[in-house]
Length: 271
Image (tube, rainbow, N blue to C red; front, side):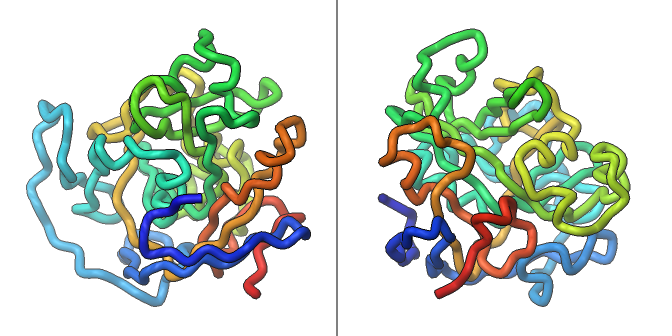
């Protein structure tokens, strides 16, 4: 497996638990208008400066500052950020922010799906449903699971590769009331956002968001954020139909120490 430096991979054990991956420490944005204590590093902060919002005429922003209801001057990730192997891209999403309207979520858990992966939708080839997966990196691929749950994926790699990263869990940063309303749950506990269907519901997206470029201002955006101190790795969940080598592949990544991680049977443990 190839991951972006700095990382240190640890061998998988047979219990299907996450294993720790060391990563460089960065600091997390905090604001009095945001939810505090939700992200993995709430004790740290960075200075937030005011800048001018870019013109909407920009079609390919190169880290354009955006204005958010609860924090300002976070940058939109540029198209080039996404156009790498899904296995390299997935851990880079941890700590980044998803924003739609007044809702901002920090990504805490992801899964990588690669070309020639027997668990990836790309294995079916280009169909009306899977066509977005074969688009250029940085676009959304949204599908319904069991006809009920809206699953948000971010297309990875170059056009035609057929790869994506599933957003598996998040922590709320802004817009808690909107999240609770969309989810139909008046809670501040991790159950609110620990699962890909819950993330899609909290963002209020449908399959019509497929092909949406996440690097353009407005709509659904993917914003830069801090790297976690440590990353956990483990096997993906819900892919029992796949080949054994793909079922057991350590292509699931999460922020170590975060309560906002899904699937209790795979609860991460440091060792």
